[in-house]
Amino acid sequence: MNKKITMKNILKLLGLCLMIFVISSFTFLFLSKSSKKNINEPVIYNTNFSVPVKKTINTETDFTFAAKKTIDAVVHITNKSTSRGNQFGSLWDFFYNSPSKEYPRIGMGSGVIVSSDGYILTNNHVIKGANEIQVTTNDNKVFEAQLIGSDENADIAVLKIENEKIFPYIRFADSDQTDVGQWVLAVGNPYNLNSTVTAGIISAKSRDLSDYDGKNQSFIQTDAAVNSGNSGGALVNLEGDLIGINTAITSNGLGTFIGYSFAVPSNIARKIYEDLVEFGNVQKALLGVNGVGLNSRLSDQLNSTETEGFFVSGLEINMGAYEAGIKEKDVIIKVDNADIKKFSDLTGYLNTKRPGDIVNVTVIRNSEVLNFEVKLKKTPYVLFYGMRVRNMNENETKKFNGQNGLVISDLQNNRLYSRGIKTGDILISINGNSIYDKEDLNKIELNSIFELEFMNKNGEKMRFIFE
Image (cartoon, rainbow, N blue to C red; front, side):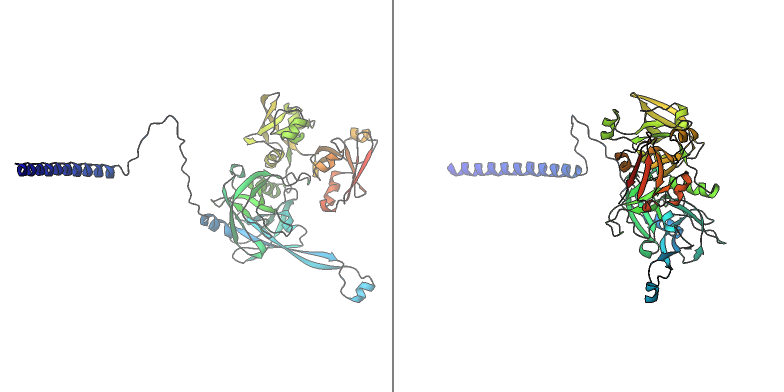
């Protein structure tokens, strides 16, 4: 009896095990199939917060198209000039004080062909003082170049070369449409190494390098490597179109690139090029406002609620801004579609305009936004050492008791401002030489200045000696 029960229990146990095995196998196969099905299917969870949608970014960057398109249109420029030195050819020359001799000098830089008939843009400092200018194209052909004209303030010059065949050239792009972070290429001839291409991004726009050099430039800043010899070369976008003329670098004193370089925007360079070719000189246009670019410190001093924009501290009578109704203490925040956040934004945009152009100026006045149509007029002023000066009129000559000089209508030179010079004062002499007309300033090199003399509205003379 006990034996039968034992066998029966064993059979039941085997049956139970078989049943468990079948159920386990079926469950494993079902779960395995379900798992494979859901490998590529996302698991969706209900949440009570939104997830931002990421923009698709094209990470593929190819510089070869722009390089091939531009490299043949960038040229090597050789500036041949002479200079006088105090070197003596012999001991006899030394003892008998023989006249100084002329020594040849050769300067080198780059240029950009911007038309099929051979017009070239470069920097003024590349060709300044040249007795002879030679241009070497990328196929090693040498041409004698004619200087069409230059603008020292913008550091732009225009050359012309002649050939029976058409030249490869670079098209102008709209530099106002460039963005910080955009890829760019610098094409030029650093250290006499022809046809060199470097890449970088736009690091900043409307960069003004000096508070008191009188140029009020508005550079494109980039980290594309630019060195000696790159001056006058091309800054192009990835379409191979010109967005700037490479002009300056930051340096450790050795004249080598250390991270940033600066280019004159193509819109400014193009306007200068067209003016020089069409008129023979640069057509300067002004709003007719004096003032300063705002920041938090100046806003507190001027009791302005704005921390960006151009603060109007004065207006020139008979100029466009005055006639349109702009007033002192207005803050200019936009001209046409160009945002004005600092002084170089305003000067940079106006440098692309000509006398007679009409611009729409947006200002903030007592927290109210107002718009004015302003006709730009030809400038009666000269920019010099961070000052905007003009000839004296008859009433001003009487006011200063017949004293000669130039009236300061605007002052951006912080060094002079901190020493008491103000708008309305007059500049009466430079290095001890009297100044009668604004044309007298054309004869003076900024780096040669060691003394400036002014007279204020009270008739007091102020002399500044620079060491």
